[in-house]
Image (cartoon, rainbow, N blue to C red):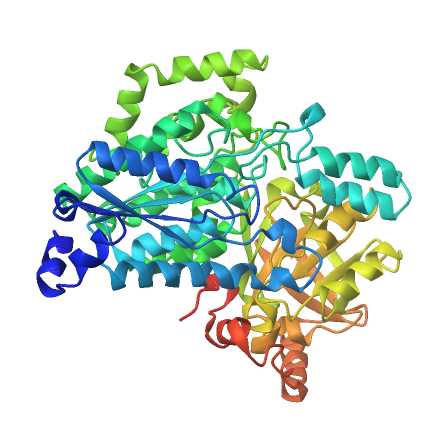
Amino acid sequence: MISQEIRKIAPEQDPLRMGMGWTVADLSKPQIMIESTFGDSHPGSAHLLEFVNQAAEGVKEEGGKAARYFTTDICDGMAQGHDGINYSLAHRDMICNMIEIHAGATPFDAGVFVSSCDKGVPAHLMGIGRTNLPSILVTGGVMDAGPDLLTLEQIGMYSAMCQRGEITEDKLTYYKQHACPSCGACSFMGTASTMQVMGEALGLMLPGSALMPATCEDLKTVAKEAGKQAVKLALQGLRARDIVTMKSFENAIMVHAAISGSTNSLIHIPAIAHEFGIEIDSDLFDKMHRGAHYLLDIRPAGKWPAQYFYYAGGVPRVMEEIKSMLHLDVMTVTGKTLGENLEELKQNGYYDKCDEYCAKVGRKREDIIRPFDKAIGTNGAIAILKGNLAPEGAVIKHTACPKEMFEATLRARPFDSEEEAIAAVLKHDIQPGDAVFIRYEGPKGSGMPEMFYTSEAISSDKELGKTIALITDGRFSGASTGPSIGHVSPEAADGGPIALVEEGDLIHISISERKLEIVGVKGESKTPEEMEEILKARKEKWTPKAAKYQSGVLKIFSEHAVSPMKGGYMK
């Protein structure tokens, strides 16, 4: 084991560890790093220390010695509405960098990674790929829903309604004070929930452990078992890249389609794959989503809060329904194949227990995870749009888009910041038939923040939500609904065509044909050849904006980030 080799090289290792309470016997045991995002930063991380300690206990029981490391994450919800959200994507890469530093400075034999949320889970998955330790992921689950199944993604809608005078300030205050009744990730299939599911779909979690209720006693047991399994992985020498292959990522994308996962996965999955030495482009997502069966009736696209996902059988149940579309021979952290894991779950009472949970909330699993032949939809959840506006692509979650906007030609209303755009929406300066552009919000422009408030202001407006589109080189919250097209690449700060859009340009959207194009100027249609010449002339006159950040982390990130559709990671 590498820990024992390092002891021979660095004589200071033993006395320094004994200085923090290690015994002589501990020094020769398999040494397991437990890396977590625990901290009083938000509900998704504030409760993780309990699971860290359970994992450490599992390591001890299996004959290993655990060392706890902490790099907490920020909360996109708390960062919304101000420049704090600009740090969101950048801090994913910074957490991954810290994992590399922790694992590289003091080598360990294996790792347990404990996280819950939007960037913490992707950062840990990236770190697992980069360090290539024998590794297992434990996710901190999902928070309970509030009264009348109130969940946090509804707050943006209620806030916009309050600003328009449709509900009172007191009513909004009530919703705000009851939307988050416990720790855990937000209770809808946003980015945090999606990425927890992706961790299991990649084979890096114990079967059935993704997106459990954070308050569930089962989660403590899972954390302890993960600690035990980490020691076994260390002794077997089964490393992360031995488990995660291209087939694993294809499985994850199929599960993503079945759950109508967050569009932010199109940033995170390519970035994670990159750290595993695998390159994934957006075309693979589009190809695999076409014809895929969408089964999960969970918010924001569906009806139920995310805690019901576990009650219905979680990732294993989804995989059982789409089994014919999966690679069942892939390896997992159990040391068994995916197919072997699924068969074992049938025999050990897992689904019986899940049915009991469903019965307690008055539901059947079919209410939450539909059978394959009774799918909610049969064309996946996302589409990749391309054209002269987005040569490298853009993404739309069509399961959350009104059918009226599947084919549309709209008038361009470009804004160079979200603040300008949302002000125009709330003042009713935006009219039906407009295409609202928010640009210079990509990774190089401002760190690629979410356009959540603007998307909610539009989707919660009964008229605008079905008659306009929101198009950006930034991204959206996993809770976003409505006609929202993001990740437009190349981004404006890189001189992409989105920077060249002018007021009154005609914008054509076709989800069926996967098109996003500028097809006219000042309301007048143009041929593709004419538009090519017009855009060429505009590009010659275009002047890059001065960098938004002149120092600090965001300066470093903006200088090194790849395009949104490539994953927005730092190269």
